[in-house]
Image (cartoon, rainbow, N blue to C red; front, side, top):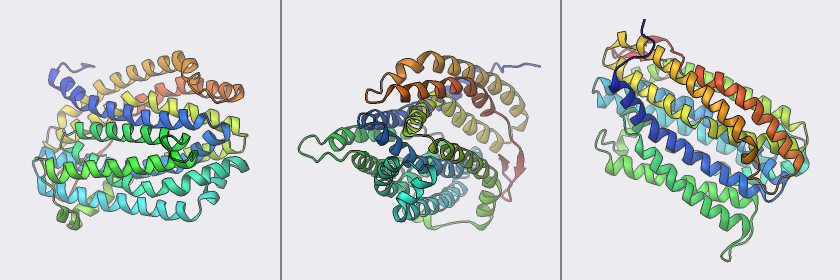
Length: 392
């Protein structure tokens, strides 16, 4: 039994698809890091409030990620069959689901910002800062969901660079506006955490505008039209729900776990919460490579299944599990080595916060090995009503 396949095309395709996604994740990490570093200068309560407000964004990302995964898996397989019509219907269905989730989150967070933050913590200062942040940033959720669905649609047809470009522009926009609005530069008022929220909202609008222009004007693979998003297919919708539920369900379970973790941390003081915020940012950096490779494997697997080459999947599965284990070990080692200088970048935090952040990062250096390995675990297969094999 060969543990690593010797097909150079597999590794080339993996790198070509993984690198743009990994760079996109790295750029997204840069946005999060900029938010944390700048709000960190405002004190422990501010960084804790933004962290707790960001928990809703994290939960939204998990819901949205489940929908994106369903788009990616289903559309990539129809791409392997060169069935563009079905891909357009799948994208339309995915966008509908994603926008529905975004609207729901926006409404609740706009109406009850302090109440939602109060679920996670009893610290009055943290609730006040988090409520100010959430009340504004919640209006970015709809734009975020639409952007992510369209980026997933492009990835499913092997167009991975656009996501990186969108994130790069978002980074520049977000960091620039953070500097101006948080600290009150160039004649603008100093808004603190509200400035960070406004910067995020504007950067999300810019993201959506760029991906929409690309999808409707520049893309030559699908040539989507606005009218395509009003067309659907009952059979494909049932397939989307049937095969998307395990993905979304897994994301929901993980989201509940993360929210429970945040609720436990919220019962401690603001120093523990701020330490968790810093470690959470390190966590995003740690999984940049893993997420890029995971997306690439999904595309390659989906296309292979769609083309009917089922026999190749066992070889692919063995290879990627070994690769991901190696990525996990390397990631854990780097986190352990980099945690002290990384925490040192946060100039405005207390020593107590730094100590808690170091403890959280130590745990992360160990758990990242298992997290990376399980990201490559093979799933199950079924067949859709359109005759396309489905991998979940």
